[in-house]
Length: 124
Image 1 (cartoon, rainbow, N blue to C red):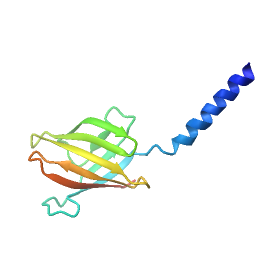
Image 2 (image 1 turned 135 degrees about the vertical axis):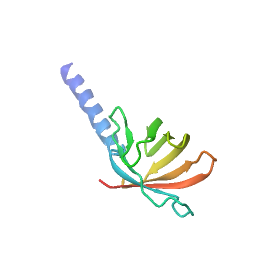
Image 3 (image 1 turned 180 degrees about the horizontal axis):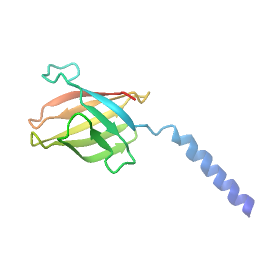
Image 4 (image 1 turned 60 degrees about the horizontal axis):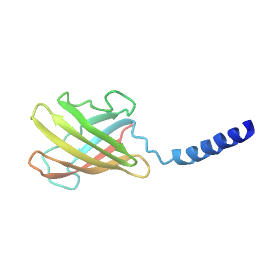
């Protein structure tokens, strides 16, 4: 009986390990480019840190006015909203991780419902 239980546990561990490579690593430092391929007056690159296991999974080092809500990590997709307390607006973000886990690409919507292309590059 013990051998059967050990065999089942071992089989389960093998199956779980085979899926572990599919989980994307979001943790790290990221640099944002706003308006990729679009005309924009934004010439700076906000810097973000992602730590999924943290109480604050996303933080911005270049702005103290950003609060993050509705954060969802789903496979290669990351969605959240930034509340900009200095401008009193909320920006929904929809990002997708590339296969090498080096870039997050997607869109953000402004308070005027303007769609802007976004790219986050992994810094480290």
